[in-house]
Length: 229
Image (cartoon, rainbow, N blue to C red; front, top):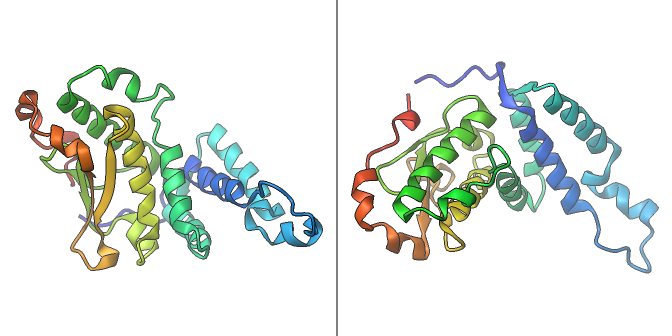
């Protein structure tokens, strides 16, 4: 399957808006030290600069008008984030913020269901949210209760060191946590940036003990809507 055209406007502008909002939040000081001169120190914080503020307003207008970004624009923006020492945290937090599909919160219904059913809802919700944000499928789920895999994804193409992959970690973990409870944890167990053949995000910890619930056997097949093309 050939990679998508990087000049096609398919990526939701809310992705760019959220990255910059997280940067601004990271750079906003909790307090001003007594001997700190804000006129000198604050302009050095990227998130508080006029350039970022202006770009946030532009992305905000683009979101209202449902405009989209090209892959080239997104990779350039990721490059700005990747120059920061806290890049991994920024991508993680952006993923968590963008996990919600429609504002309803995935856990309100899922937590009342058997865990295996909640896993299936989490898989579907993850795939749907990724398509909403990036305009196409991002990887595919395996037959495990919650394991997303992909090769040569946008995040690896933008960052061969692997920090950008934390966006998927944050998004997946937030959706899974809301679906199955506080012990729903996701790890980036394999990464092309670390020399693995693919990137892989999977449920781990206590939540894996629930995989053998009786209803689970009915839900083991891969999600057809998420199969890689």
